Amino acid sequence: MNRPPVFPDNPPMTIAMTDFARRRLFPGDGRRTAIQDTSAEAFVERLNSEAPEAVLPGYAPFCRLHVHRNWTATRCSAIPITPENRQLLCSAYEARTPAELPVLVRWFEGLEPPVAKYLVPILYDREQLAKEGTTIDADWGIVGCLYTMEPAEIPMVPITMLRNALGVEEGGSGVPIDREAYQRAVAFWNSHANWR
Image (cartoon, rainbow, N blue to C red):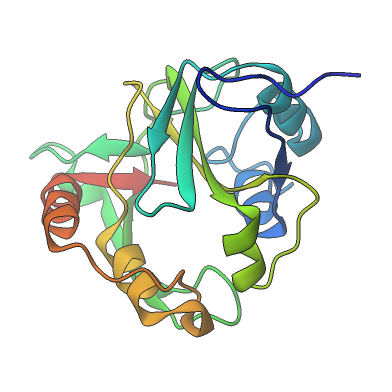
């Protein structure tokens, strides 16, 4: 049996997959924007047995990000917008779950980004997940994952910050908007988009 890793300056910890993240990261429909070449169970097993290259602070005390070298064929999450690809941007109102209100999202169609160099799982602690109605048998739960070329965080999409500020009842976390972080996110997402 694999033992939980001991991270520098941190006690041993365990990580679990939340249902919310499983639906988004491992949807089972073969979509190429999901994590490739591994199962949700194998992904969690690897996170619990391999120390991350770095641990980054999240947007709130209950959130952290673990940086791992990409061992899959998963492609980058975000693509820079250029004059040559701008016409490939699409948009629609969508909700992540049936309980959430739809919000305006945009993405590229017809582009293929490079394979990511890093996978950066986004983790919430057990107490925050319980506040949001999710129970886990671990210290931390995966709520998302970034696929990046650099061992760093991609700024949260501005609408996600707004949803978080609306509170748990609207699908957020209840964390108020940080204006500086919001402006950084707007600057990034003005020049980047996800792909499908």
